Image 1 (cartoon, one colour):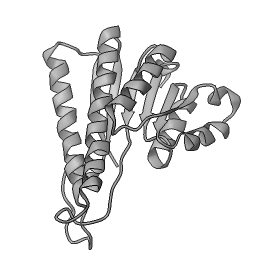
Image 2: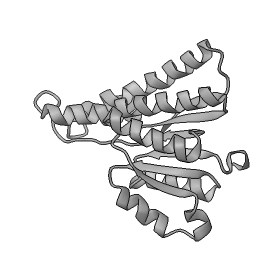
Image 3: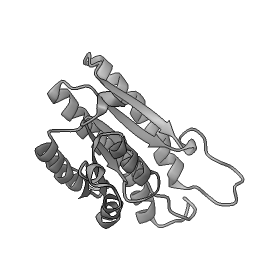
Length: 194
């Protein structure tokens, strides 16, 4: 981890759960970390619990990953304040209850916008930042086992969730192939499954 010390990491969905744990762990490892979420106050609570030397490397910023303009604004803040992104942890995600065949279309839209398009928006920003600076970096897509198979007989429908997560598997492969086509060997793209 020493090679990444003082490099800039961005974590989407950093306000709770796995995102919060990743946000804190990266700061403890020496990264400068920007936690992004709609609930910025929860990220600030995490920062406030840290020792001063760790807290000084942690930053909270608003971002609704469903909205390209929100991603643009957050990226501009990161670029101007920290000089770019070295590591992106795409983690933001939601799941809604209901059956795909009759659930509210807004819930389907929000699931796919958050779990897939949000990852696409941030992957593009991180890749552009790394390519422009000719920097070494890593784009990590946090996925689910439902990104590889749809659970059956679990007593409820997982509706649009696995649809969005299957897309992350393809996103990783597409990004890696496009970087290969332009001869970029500095950016690693991976999927981590939880």
